[in-house]
Image (cartoon, rainbow, N blue to C red; front, side, top):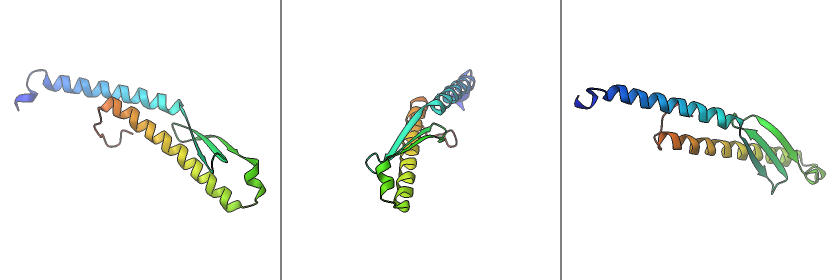
Length: 108
C-alpha cells in the first residue's frame, strides 16, 4: 500500500476532518436561511427555514371565496412541497461545493 505510507494517511484524515467542519458550518448556516414556495400562481405562499420548519403561510383571500376546501388544501400542500424542494436543492448545492460533488451518504 504505497499510497498510505508516510504522512499520506494523516493528511487524508486531516482533509476529511476539515471537510466535516466545513459541512457542519454550512448546515448551521443553511438551517438559518429562509426558502419560499408558492402554488396557484401565488395564491398560497409558504416560507420555510433550512430545517424545513414552516415560518409563514399566506393565502390570498380570493382563494377562500370559492369555498373549495380541497383545492385550498392541495394548494397549501403544493406550496409547502415547493418550499421544501427549494431548501433541499439549495442544501445539496452548498454541500456539493464542499464535497466537490462527491456523494457522501448521510451527510445531508
